[in-house]
Length: 261
Figure (spheres, rainbow, N blue to C red):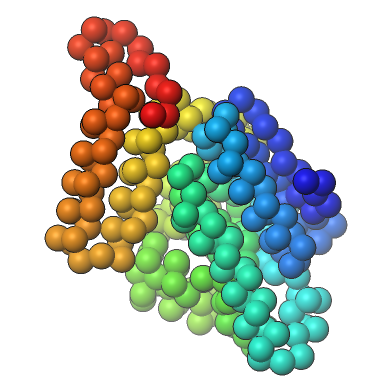
């Protein structure tokens, strides 16, 4: 597929998706979200790719929110709801994937940009990154999972504080409240993200997928049910060819060779 708003590159076992609308700080238009979804489906379908990284073009912005011009053009509640539901599909797409998606947050992650980052499995931020949910300052509210994923990541009180005030904050605060997993010097962001992606790509693919789904789906289950779900997945991966290879390699003191089966 030819992309107009993103750049999709393969680097070994890693697919790198770069939102490339730097003249508007990589704002998410409807076409851009569709292209991100298509690239994610490419990653999922390509057996040679095991991890995806999403980042933004340039040094200023990861994604600085939704395209305000498109929002302003929404004439009816139905049209706005349709836009919201299409935005949600990116998060659902990432959640369904068997492969890990890393957000490499290189600058502004505001509104829809932060919602995109929160939908990813792991978030690494440049120390210069800025975060916020400013929808309230426009007289609207988050519409791409912001109220829900923010609550699950940092708790209801802090989620309400950030979405009700629209205040902006830096990478150190994002790390402190648990919104991102790592903060690194801006010049090292993509190197660190690639190193992490390569590390995960070198793990057994079935185990990676099982761990992701155990965490993802388990959050919506009672603890006892989630533990039984984990047990079922554990049985599958231990009995897999990769499970046998990993334990054999450990006992034989050699590096494992995982094949994804």
